[in-house]
Image (tube, rainbow, N blue to C red; front, side, top):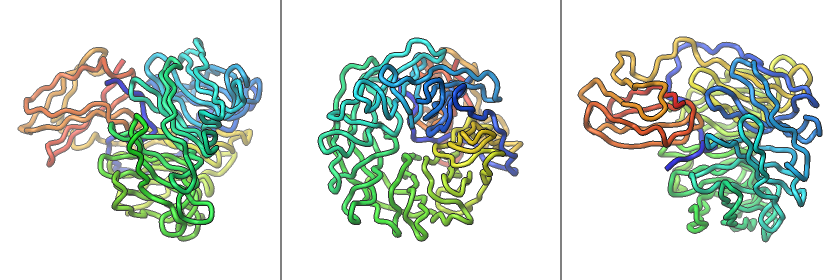
Length: 460
């Protein structure tokens, strides 16, 4: 089944061997001409990075843009304008290979936000829906897809005015409200995005739940048809964090995430928890001075390290999945390289890409890239035990294992972390139909439980 990239985010499958290079600023936002104050993430189609700004542009209501990974080729695809197109997008774009899909916080018929699609060249804009309070309002996250429906959340609106979970078809029909958030029972005001493991949708609410006077947020799961809701955790402050603003990510065993506040010094935490709600572990307490504070985005992973950013204290960091080996990789310093990163990182296997909501030459935010270590080798593939051909591919590729591995599991991940293909085979070659995959960069991982190899796959 064809799927769009989810805000879950296993970004690459490589190991790090040397020190990180300096950040490269790809773009300074200018305001009217190219937007300002981005509050989402970047996405890639392997040729361009695509993103949105919350403000700026001709109408000062935000923009959609694309730019090449080397910082050239900037194109403003859309100026948001209010009623017609929506205004002030906070989240990120996703793609089905033909259209980019996204949401705005405001604008539309009722000034409560919109769902839209637009082609990567800036043509074909369609407003799919205007939020109208009863069906939710003011979405602060991004959409995900299972190939049939788009799924998302709103920060407000719905029966209790605490936000909703919904699904809608890519043509704008078939809207269904899956859940009304209700406060103490199941949380309120979700500010991130959903992720999926193929059976359940997982997410977090920024407030609500049983702990504290007004509740400090929840983790939950729910089936795509709106049944099977389970509250997995109530955030409680010092012990396990509070007020999460980002999204979860999943590595097949644990869900990982961050909270904006809570923890030992009330600067936020990094945590992991099993999909059944057991096994919660606090991996790190942010403390402002040494490791930043108040993370507003999500984590990505390379299988060994988690990577993320903090909004206050302005840092890029990495930490192992078990909470060890924390390392601060960069301090944002304002005009030089940006400040206050609000979204999440994205990786193409060679660089980490992201945006800051402020800083840069004009104090309106920047687009940046940060080099992964020089001399990276693909995981345990130094003797070419794994080969993929043709690569790049358009229709199908043959995966060849040049060892005696048996019962080999093949997994394919996109650059944002979604497992888009999974199979088991015993032969030395396996043909993969890549027509089911959108154009872009993928990472193929093969493993027999003892040995593991990976290689990049490009689908055109």
